Structure formats: C-alpha cells, structure tokens
Length: 265
Image (cartoon, rainbow, N blue to C red; front, side, top):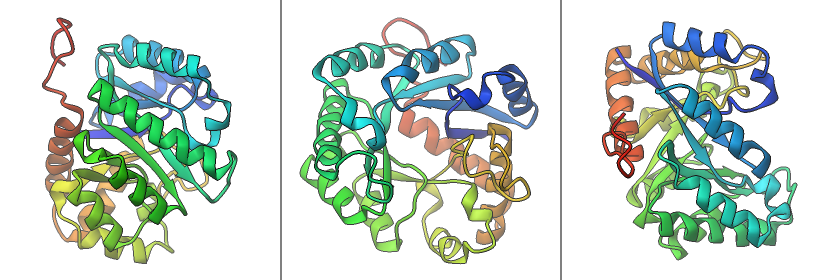
C-alpha cells in the first residue's frame, strides 16, 4: 500500500533539527513520496536542496499570497529558473488569502494572475491556496484559463459547488488532517460526495496535525490518519483510498514523465 503526502513544508524551521528522523518515520509509515512546498524566495533553495537529497521527495515552488507584496520582477526570473529544475513538479502555493490579508488584496490578485501565467509558460500544474476568497479564486482561475495546466486546490475549504467547478477545470481536491477534527462534519459530508479519482492527501506539515496529534507539529507520516478518516467517511478500505489518491498524484504531477534527460522517478 502506497501513500503520498502531496503537500508539506519540510524546508520550514520546524524541521531544521530532525528532518532526517521525520523523513525516516515517513518511509517507515509507508509514505512513498513527499512534495515539499517553498512558499517564498528565501525557502526556494532549501526546498530544492531537500528534494535533491532524497529520491522520493519533490519540490513545489511559488509565492504564497501572504508574501506577494514583496515580489519584484527579478524574483520571477529566479523562480522561473528554479522551476526548470528536474525535481520541481508544480508552481505553488499561489492564490488568495482574504482571511489574514497579509498582502493587499489587489496585489494578491495581480500576483496570482502573474504566477498562473508563469505556470502556463513552464507547463507546470499549479497548487492553489484559497482562504475565504472562494469566488475570487474561481473567477481568476477561469479568466486566466488555468485549466490549461490544471493542478490542486490545496487544503480545500470550499463547498460542493466550488469543488465541482474546480474539478470541471481539471483540478484535484486535496484533503488535510482537518477532516479528522470533531467539528469537521460539514467538511466530511462534502468529501463523502466527491469522486475518489479527484482526491489527494496532504499534511500541510507542520500545520494542521490530524487527531490524535492535533495541536502538535504535523509531519508526513501522519498522512495515514487522514487517509483512514476518508476511508471511514466513504465506507471503503484504506487500501482503496491509498490506491486512488496515489494514482491521482502520479497524474497531476506527471511522475512517470522525466524532465530533460534526468531520468524517471
């Protein structure tokens, strides 16, 4: 049985002291691949270093909506260069966060559009951050024709209608550990009604640790608890969840396709 953590932040300081142990625990728990996400310029190099240190870890690079106020034209040139690395499989996480508003909303929307354009230029899927900006996110995805690259709605927090519209554009719905929370019955009901071939698993480590680790540092090995909860919600086996979500990851990240002459993973 193969499980994949499609979204973690191993480059963050939370893992500086024990990254090797964290990765070892993930492998021992049956996690075959991990995607680590560098969300700002200072994290891109570290994410790539980690990805190149382990054959089963890949990188996703982009500028998070919290940080887009700091972006200049030169940063896009650096990002573009990094994204041509053989271990980079998507551009992200990009999008809108109207909950914390750490960057002005107009800047968030402009940078979101720009990064979709960059992903189209590089032919990379995109990983979307959407928090309390559901309608605006959908509008930008449609206006920028993001379906040409597709991707993932990371840490999905929308409703069934939004999920349907995103899936129609070729996006996958990624489920974090919050599906295990006691107050997440509404979220579980949404996931119960979605097709299995559109779902991914993620930890968003070090954030959103699932029950029974809620409140502690999250890590990729915990993705099994999310998978188990999905299996319970849908009344299917853990093996079925693992098989379907693994196939979905291979599709969205093109894991059977090599970049350049670097070989396959």
